[in-house]
Length: 164
Length: 101
Image 1 (spheres, helix red, strand yellow):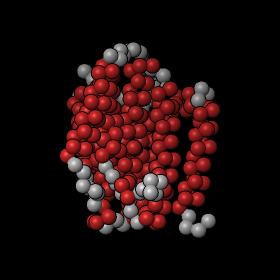
Image 2 (image 1 turned 30 degrees about the vertical axis):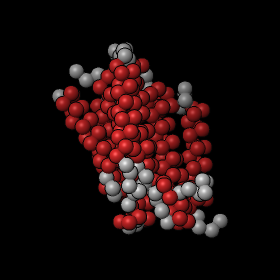
Image 3 (image 1 turned 60 degrees about the horizontal axis):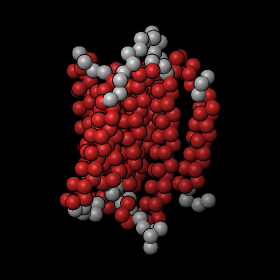
Image 4 (image 1 turned 180 degrees about the vertical axis):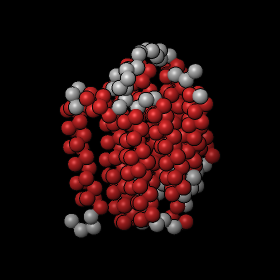
């Protein structure tokens, strides 16, 4: 059951990713990416990461993708503006080979990893246990993240403003 | 039997699909979305390591930080894109040669 579900979700994630990089229209690509992100969220749930499962749906499939789709619709690109410069077969082949070699190498490296087979605690992955670690061991990175988000917000307002 | 390796293989495949998008496509919107896919692939391996490797929550916290950074990156990236589109009326990376000319 676990295996069947994993392969279905993995296939959906990979198909969504492939559609996203291959579709001409960025809006269709965005919807394909949402498919991929939602299957990844389900995979997080299968890994007992319930807090990150919720975050993935809320932040990624929700907020970030809404932002991207909103921008695509706001730009309202015409057909000729979406036309990419024609690429040679050589470049396509070279890029695809490079990425395939990279993926193959990564799989080779990952194949040597030995799982630790640790006992899973009952509170694994829920908000309480994640929050406990986040606000004790990782409290300084957590504060830095809030600073980064503040800087990002100010920067976005400054960039997107017509007249400063 | 699904274990750590299957999740890591999927993560590697998704990461390099995203890398292909960044390297091959010329539409800035698609490049941004490919970066999101790469960040998500890394998150998957963080969480898989947390589940099958350490058994602690450290991987989940790292994935949380990656998500927060991705949100900031998407916001700033899209703001830059909108600004570029306003000034140059293009979203193609090949047309943006201000620093070269």
